[in-house]
Image (cartoon, rainbow, N blue to C red; front, side, top):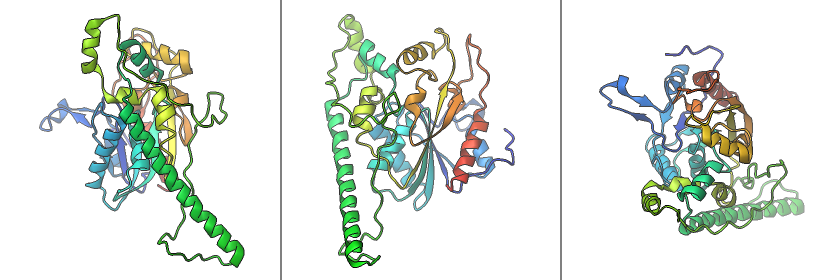
Length: 350
């Protein structure tokens, strides 16, 4: 059990740990704890010892963002009713949480903050490569249309809020009164939604995204056997993690909630050899987007308030895999990192 320093502080509200693609809460028999594998190795125990209430989520490993978010919501509706929660999400888990916050409205709990760790907010070139080279990860037209309808609903809500704000401004300007009475039951006008960090690679505002490209599943014509296997290899998550989907479909139609605080961390390592599990993905992403952790670039990881970049690979960030085959990289203290994230939540009032 790691020693928890007195310099750390537990957040006021429960932490919900949300796993990424192919993630889990734990694997192995409950009757033999020593044989179990935990996605958040040592992290849940350390946070609990610090005084935080920790909820470890479990959602479909390779499901779509929508399905994973709905599963997360069902779990929380039964465990934290009437409570405030802080989402702490690794990788794809951050996209699940953003969907839940923006598009699931019948919540019986209140989300205070979302902190994402190496989340591909703008997608991953590795998923583009899998789509273009292997043939997996082609977006279904129906899913794209559903996402755009959700975005339109969010924009209509924003327009309604802006209309009510304008009515309030005009009323106060003409009457000099600060109180506004109307037939609506709304007593507080939320600020409009905003798109968080929708910027170009140069750092300037990118404006509205271009229309998404047509994505028909062409498969791999050079290998008929592979074409037969692709339906069994493919999973909805692959399409949801491409740069096309995240930048042209998901982000424009998933506005941030102004009542939720958004924080993010990225990770990068200087080099991963090609024979290591993350070696080839690191090279692919390096060529397209620069520094990365083997699966997600620091550019893609930025959302809301970007806290910083950790010297770690993608799997270091949740303390799951510690084996470094043939590459020199100093150990990453994941437990200490999560203690600092928890302390940040506390200092920010969460």
